[in-house]
Structures are given as C-alpha cells and as structure tokens.
Length: 308
Image (cartoon, rainbow, N blue to C red; front, side, top):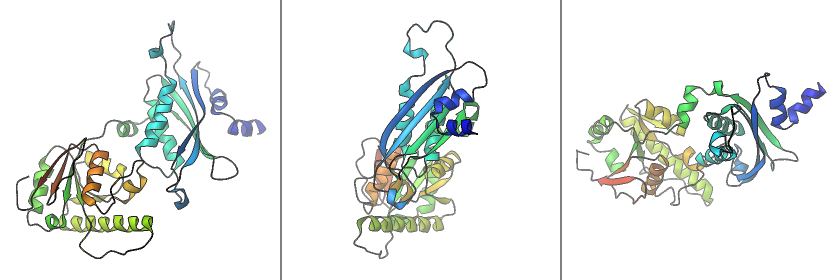
C-alpha cells in the first residue's frame, strides 16, 4: 500500500514506468511547467490569474535505426508546450479536468505518441497544490475527439437589428441563408425594453449580456428553425448538423481569453468580435452599418431588401 501511495504522488514518469506493459517504449517529459492563467468555476477565480503547474509524460514509439540527429524523427518537446498553449488560448475553462483532456487529445494526435500522462495543479488556491492527473492512450482518441480538434467550419454570421427581427421578410431571409452551404449563426442586439442599471461594472455587463440572450429567445420564438446556443460545443454540433443557430453570448464572452474591446452594449461590434472568434466566412449586418474587420468579409443590407 505504501508503494501505491508513493506512486500516486510521484512524478508521472514513475507512474508511466510502473504501469508499463513490458513492451519497450521511449518517454519524453515536461516537468514543472508553470503558466499564469485565468481558470476556475468559482466567482472568486474570475477576472484574476493564478499559477498552474503542468507535468506531462508522453510515451512514444521507439525509433528504429539510426536517429541521425534528425529533429523531424522525434516528438519535439515544443509539441507538448504548444498543446498546452493552444488549449489555454482557445477559451477560458472552469475545470482542470477539461483542460487535461484537451491537452491529452491534442498530444495524442501526434503520430509518435502512444500514451500520455497529464498532471495539472493549481498552486495558489490553498496551502498545497490542488490538481488532477489523467492517463490516455492513442486508442482512447475517438473519432469525436479527433474531429473536435480538427478545423471547424466557417459559418456565416448574420446580425439582425430589432427592426429586422420584426420584418415580414425574416422568414424569407432565413430561407435564403439556410440554403447556403456555410453554417448559419444569427446574432441580435439588446431588446427595446428598459434594463436594470447597477453601479457595478461587471454586474452590469452580465445584466446586458442576459438582455441580449432574452432577445435571442425572442427571435427563436418567431421562427421554429432557430435554436438558441450558448457554448462552443453546442455551436460546433449545431453547425455540423445544419441547425440554424441564434447566439446567446454570455458564456463565450465571459469565458474568452481575449475578450471584446468594445462594451457588450455595442452589439454590432460584439457580433464582429464573435465573427472573428468563429473564423466566419462572412458577417452580414441587416438594418445597421457593418463594422470593419481585419479577418472576416463584411457587408450590410437595408431592411427593405428581400434578396440577400
């Protein structure tokens, strides 16, 4: 029992060796890689950064023959640190477990990787390190996980003003937009009703985001094809399955690593930020002026035009 306890808290390298199945493998490791990041499910962990320690061991297929000092024949350490940086940069996460899974999946996409041990610890949440460790093998990397890491589709993002939402042309516009091959995501602004006003900036931000989501549900009520979605996972599934999405912005905005520069009350600018985050093929604004974006094609249409 004492040996099991020691191994439970030993470096993942020792655990990898202890759980080897007898077949010879090589191992590369990353020890005590510390990054400052915003992560965590508690309100106290939002808006603040904390130190996270990463320890990773990757078992790789031994190289047959002379390595010839050729870096292209090995799994580079940079691939491990890049996997960590990529997943930290993708979105703000609540759980270390989610981050560990995504890092393991990304590393296991490397052809040399056979099995990976990922330990992640929060160093600033208590008197000791609080963390999680997972072990995943190449056979665990199912098609769904592989597909999630691959390039996502490039949707058409369409912003509708309140006047556009109320237009008799709405159903026809959705018909036209749905006929395009690119997935469709509809975005809306603030509703034409009074909102609660509070002196606390972050609280007001949440109130405003929730008001936008109220308007999203109002749009969904106007056309049964429209489904309100709030997370990247929901959006990815909906886009792959041809669903007409209406974006509920709270979670994606609050969990973003690089949050929008403009206030959320500037809903056209917020939609432009979202279009760039989604790597959209186009942003179409109906009933307002389209923002200037560097990486997304933009255009605007007046409400009176039926053809888009």
